[in-house]
Image 1: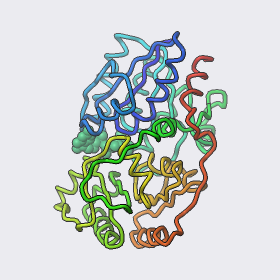
Image 2: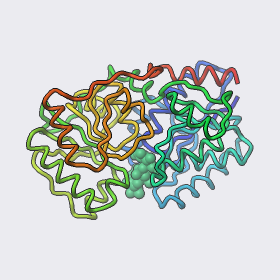
Image 3: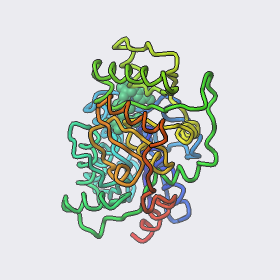
Length: 355
Ligand code: UD1
């Protein structure tokens, strides 16, 4: 069996790494790695390959940035050339980024089977580009590797036969479990013992000057009580420059994005994490660190139901209150969902061997 793995954007790398690793145990399977080049900065891409011990991509489509249509279309055109020259039996796509839907669509029309890793997640919010990517990718996939029961139900409700839904657990947590011991303190001047870790990059939070301005004002206010460490995603950096919002208080450390091992260390040692990321909601639930999510909804409801995640939406007053709760020792406690045990990649490999 010839398997192509598709990665493109930062959150794909830690999801694909454990699956690639696990399939290595089956010598009859040939694997190729396709990097679409959606993310291309060294600290958004190469550093993850190095730290996660991933093989070099066999194909790099080098699409770079662009509008949704342009980026998606460019990935499709270039990926079609790759698979017509070298037909795989199965294409494994990960998560919900533009690279996921673009390559799933090309593969399914070429009659190649598609497996979606992290299938079935739904935020029910079609203003999120990722939601559209999730729904469409699931409609054209053949195999559904899901992290939790809610995901199984979502795809079943959309007409997917139960035989092709495989609840394997959380591949992103596989990588976390494997590398937790290797997490390392980042070198940074001025870091204090106690800090809150912040990441923000969703268009809904960073593309509007008023919203982003209010978020920064809140972080500045909170930094009077506790240090804020805020590694800035390239999209957010561009917006901060565009909106002339780069002035922050002395106790807010704005930094470049970190590698996986450094960011993991920061999550582990943070008093709390404030984010709008999907994956970080899961990682903090696993690490049992309080997470305040600046979104109205989540495609990962289990992190709020049983994990440490609290959805605060755009409500910066609520954010302040929740941070105060954490500082007073009343942060949310949680438990780790079933099958978030470091073995999801292995389960996927075993299922593929059976198929
Ligand atoms: C993408 C994903 C999002 C994911 C996020 C993680 C989609 C629709 N969105 O969002 O789901 O949570 O990745 O990071 O696929 N840029 C650089 N260097 C890079 C990459 C991006 O400077 O290496 C800048 C460019 O200005 C680009 C912007 O960031 O226009 C946005 O990049 P893009 O990949 O379009 O979307 P993200 O916001 O990163």
